[in-house]
Amino acid sequence: MVKKKSSSPGANRGYKVADQIQRDLAELIREVKDPRVGMVTINAVEVTPDYAHAKVFFSVLVGEPQETQDALNQAAGFLRNGLFKRLHIHTVPTLHFQFDRTTERASDMNALIARAVASRSKDSDE
Image (cartoon, rainbow, N blue to C red; front, side):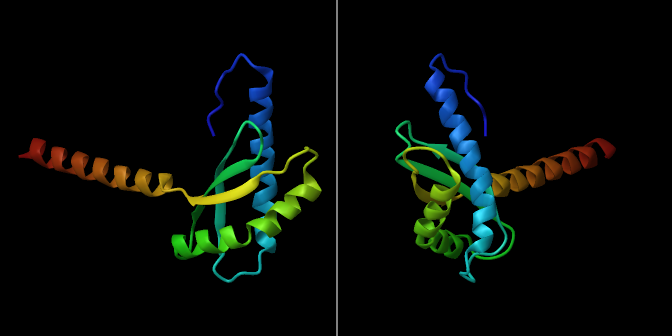
């Protein structure tokens, strides 16, 4: 997650809370018993300024992303309860899980670059 510089001291606290939620969720997700939740990586968390909601971006190594997203959104209450026990903040945000396609896109871009380089080296050999 990219840290943005801000003049307000409260904004920095929001990033710290988001980072802590990310770390805690990575541990708590292992406790979810739903078989649709396999190997999940929490990539980033964005928290609203009032801490009422948090978007949780995740990726999966194995399994169907949409099924995993549905399972995580169903388990959001359980995970929020676990966060409530760990975090020492007044409001624990409602969790909204979204599949993060960043790694997928990066892989596609790398493949395109590799093809372009291979094509260019073929052209220069001829």
